[in-house]
Amino acid sequence: MSEETNSNQENIKTETLGDPAGIEFFPERRGDKISRSWFRVLFLGEGRDNLQKVKCERQIHNVVSESPLIKLMMDALKSSGCGIDLNRHISCEPCSQVVTGGYDAEMNQIVVCQNTATSKAAVHGALAHEMVHMYDFCRAHIDFTNVDHLLCTEIRAANLMHCSFMSAMVMGTASLIRIKKQHQECVKRKALASVVAVRDLTEEEAKDAMDRVFTKCYNDLEPLGRRLRRNSNDIARIYRERYLYGYGHS
Image (cartoon, rainbow, N blue to C red; front, side, top):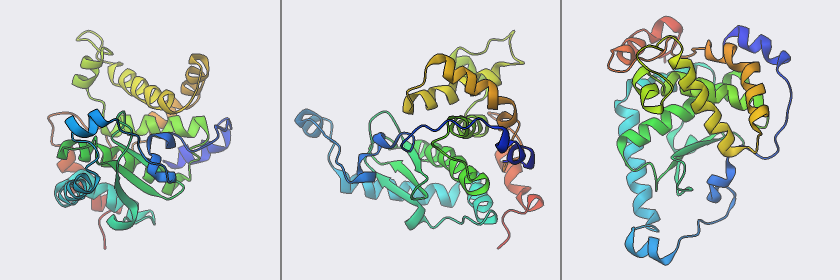
């Protein structure tokens, strides 16, 4: 996060939340196994873990080789002292059906869900989102058991990697006469949904946390430096300009 955000960490309310956020969605992270009914195995093709893993790893290789956005995130992580080794820091695993990826801060590892992120676009989206969390953990040493820290990194991931005017229209947070605030509302809704999915928070607790951290976290655009607009050349531009910000140097 920016220097301003780092300096404000001391002012963030400490509210610990117990176990790492969302770890129950990734049972094999802690030695458990996903329970599958015979119907899902026989008719929906689940349980083919080895084949899914090979396909997932191939998709990751393709995305990392081809995507300017993922290359920039990897350069930014390397410049922050947290270079990514694909074999060590990215793992394909079966997950709960409600997620496509996650970040395990204890192991400093991104999980791509081989049973739900089955397309190239899904793998790209999972990597982009989770690399924001990895970057925040590397650079700002955020604590994922702290509700403010967790919400902040979800705000940043939604802000940098997901929300646009059209996506906000689909979510119902924007209209043609409410353009000014639609992007912020999209980010708030997506970040809150992500946090509430993994933490047992009341509506009041979630709102209070949002009020505390939104402005500084929404305005922190590192390492991209801008919000990506749909149907624009923003991704190509940030990749070309990465050297200006110290990224991409060997």
